[in-house]
Length: 256
Ligand SMILES: Cc1cc2nc3c(=O)[nH]c(=O)nc-3n(C[C@H](O)[C@H](O)[C@H](O)COP(=O)(O)O)c2cc1C
Image (cartoon, rainbow, N blue to C red; front, side, top):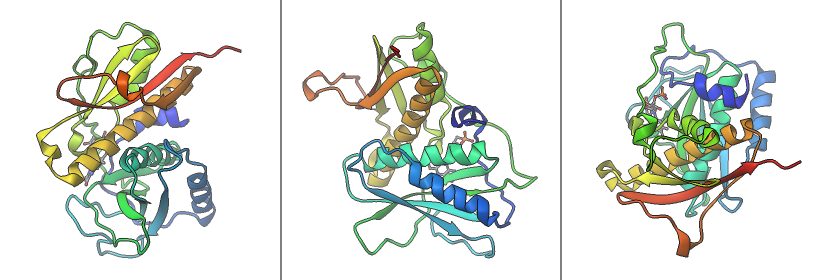
């Protein structure tokens, strides 16, 4: 299974087998972590794997926790795009794990001990083998027409890219992403929700957008498109009432 195919297979799993992963496989996971492509090279981050298969206690404090044999903890240095970047890189890893038969669940409120340097914990993901009793019911999603400024999305490439983002996971399943289409461009917006009042909720919402951007990039790659994620010049930034502009996916058919 490719990472792109894993987009459609992934769902949050909240019951795990508390068993250790083969050290050889663990080594491969750690190697993959080194290959992750960040959105912003200046947004410094690191990912630690926490083993918990031999403990019954919760490793983290916080709400909505899930007990799992392993956790990924992404910490980042302060940067304007730290949260978007965290979602973008963590989702690459989540989809890699799903493609290899593992189950995952983001834990937005899991509080790990702050690092002693400038890196601060941003997001935790539980992972391992799903328990036989794990719920497989997919969560509901907004229709594509609710996410774009001008439905329907007739252009096939844009439709496939937005569809990949539509089914991304998000904190509280808020699905904060919105899309504005122009020729060869999909502008990505974050819906401003009342829940976003707290600093952490805004951070999680930006993280959600980073996750959706990872799905969009994988879809563009699957379509053999030349693509890049960037931002419009400040003077040309697109505007959408009630939404905040985050980034633009530029795409065109590859010329060989
Ligand atoms: C940033 C983020 C934080 C999340 N936090 C939690 C959490 O604390 N506990 C939990 O059980 N699920 C959490 N989730 C999972 C979402 O509830 C889930 O992605 C959403 O309901 C959609 O369901 P699906 O992942 O099965 O498609 C989180 C997801 C994201 C992206």
